[in-house]
Length: 93
Image (cartoon, rainbow, N blue to C red; front, side):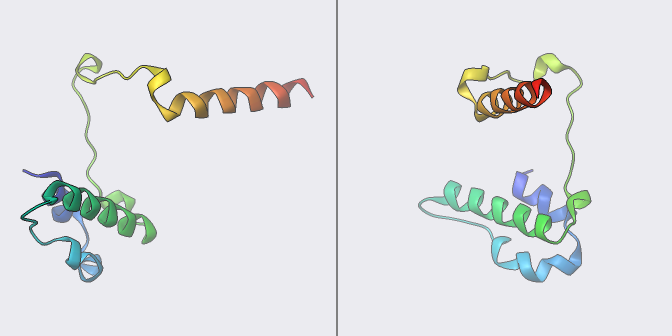
């Protein structure tokens, strides 16, 4: 099952009128780009309407099955170091 279909199955009927333009099947050139844009738009709409609990949650049976990304290749490394510096500076004051 496609990710977009999983999300649409879990969305409340009250939001379907807002999400309807993003729920149609995509074909042709740039299909993947438009599907990703649809998914992001649907998640943004769910977020704006404070319906996070409607989105499906996924888990792994083993942490070894989750791919690891080196810290230097992610934005999280920059955020983590910025938070660390903020914590260190504020704790010394």
